[in-house]
Image (cartoon, rainbow, N blue to C red; front, side, top):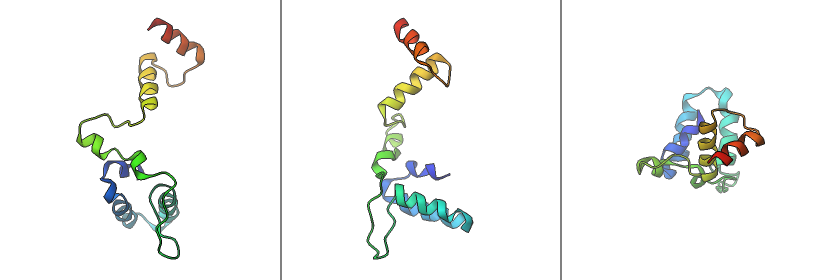
Length: 104
């Protein structure tokens, strides 16, 4: 649900979250508040915006999708997904990884 924020421009992430918040019931409000605290920037009591713990630029892939690049912007995740696809298993153990790497 909230992972769609990575596909909008960085300037529109907060707006998109607030639009989604209007659609969902009040029961989901704690989830949105958590998301704002950690992934966006929720104003504090003095209406000063606090920097998120994990910056939007770290996760946002809007520009990458627009440029027809892979959505994964973390090379280690890309490598892991590639190895997983070649092995054909979701859980890898050390021996299986070594076996595949030795064949390469």
